Length: 409
Image (tube, rainbow, N blue to C red; front, side, top):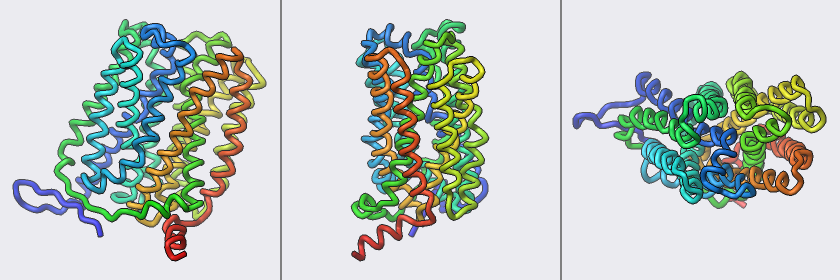
């Protein structure tokens, strides 16, 4: 059973109304707006950051990998904390950690940079895991629409951060430190909006954990989530450098990565809606994989301006569609919101550990060879593996049925 009450002025008030849902939806969108800028704004500034903090170039991939490691460590804890504290309180705590990390990493010190990025990752991990559960709980009949909406907002600000980082640092004379710190204002806005929701009391059942980890369907969701994240974070971290090595200025490279994310917005919004209208989603998985495959293959085989732009568009469509489809799967493959939260925690924990390997591995491969062919071949191979797991996740099955069968067995 589920209880969700608010006490105002000592009197009990039912909260299942349009006003609360509208306010909650706005709060979710503000949360979503904070989930990527702290990471996507780093890639275009990586040379200035490593120079300013004296971080060795071979370790530059750690700047993006560290928050992903935090994702992996803290994602399983989010559902357990939500059971004890309530979804809203845990989400608020995540925002506070994000704010602390954003400010710490702006100091001119390599250790503080990495510590700050760890705090950033910890704060983001909470919302990454719990937002699908919140959608399942409060918008059960509009899962596709609400998922598409908040992931679209997330990607808008992710793309914006990639594009404005270099201008903020250079044209506005903020330096790399100011360009990173400016996103704290967005976090403060979200913290203010969420204050009224901290008065909520919400208790939920908790899905059994051990059988979930034995569910093959849960593992398919996990690997699809992890591999699409691998592709996204490698692209965010290293495509600016790849483009710069092919003659683009750092500012232009940053804007191309920004455009890559922004062109995927229609797919981000539409794909979960389409997924929610279907019992099975194999065509969507194949379409997502095909855009990734063609995008990376194009970067591997051609270097002209217009083919590069086309490849960025294809990659943007794949990234926008894949993350929203992965998040929609958490709700579509479960019957109850507490199960959605549990599988989200599992998938994002293991998935982001897998994704964290990406930026560091690609950076190390490039450091050894000073060529991008090897990393691009690796990304194409990851796309093919992701497709296999995505097709498994697209079947019309529910995790509770897998878990029930395991418990009966």
